[in-house]
Image 1 (cartoon, rainbow, N blue to C red):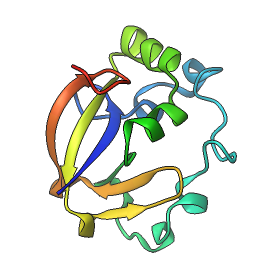
Image 2: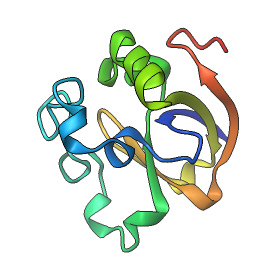
Image 3: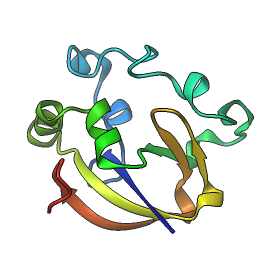
Length: 122
């Protein structure tokens, strides 16, 4: 099992789906750039996924997560939108790895901890 990290609300919905586009700016802008590439430009094999709604996005480490969501953005997501960092366990065969992010098959994942800060503490 591999530990991965993700940002989501209590219902398991991440910030790009849970927060309306007009409420995301300016903190969650920059999608499809070098810093925040789309899954199609970043994750090997994403174009072959037949049922993307079964996949969730995350990161291989807290460092990668905070590269994408810096601590001030994580605080804003938590305080304003109820989003928090969760730790998830997934077998490698259910993960598509990208350069910045990853996608995992959600039905095969097991959530371990919620409310982790950017240093890995609850």
